[in-house]
Length: 90
Picture 1 (cartoon, rainbow, N blue to C red):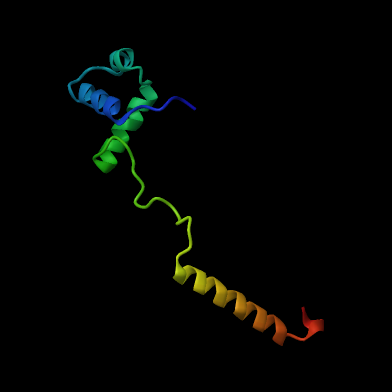
Picture 2 (cartoon, rainbow, N blue to C red; picture 1 turned 30 degrees about the horizontal axis):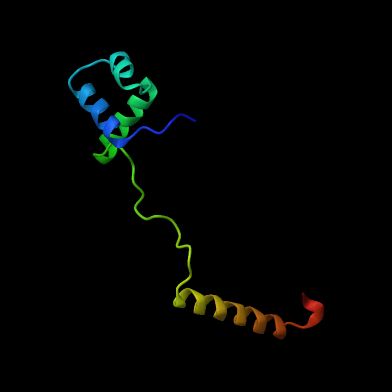
């Protein structure tokens, strides 16, 4: 995996591309590979930005009180259901 390319450097490379500067020259001045330049342009066409940002930051790491109550209730339901099934039926 390559090194991180800052958003500012990507924006400069995109501006150079828009001005008609060819990829080998952009690579020489910015150090960004031609493959990365294609990906930056593709991302810009699809999102209007040079970097993709997730809509949300992933799953929450800490349970809030509602999550804890739901988990507790599910455990109780499973325990009750398990106690209702005859022992030979598991």
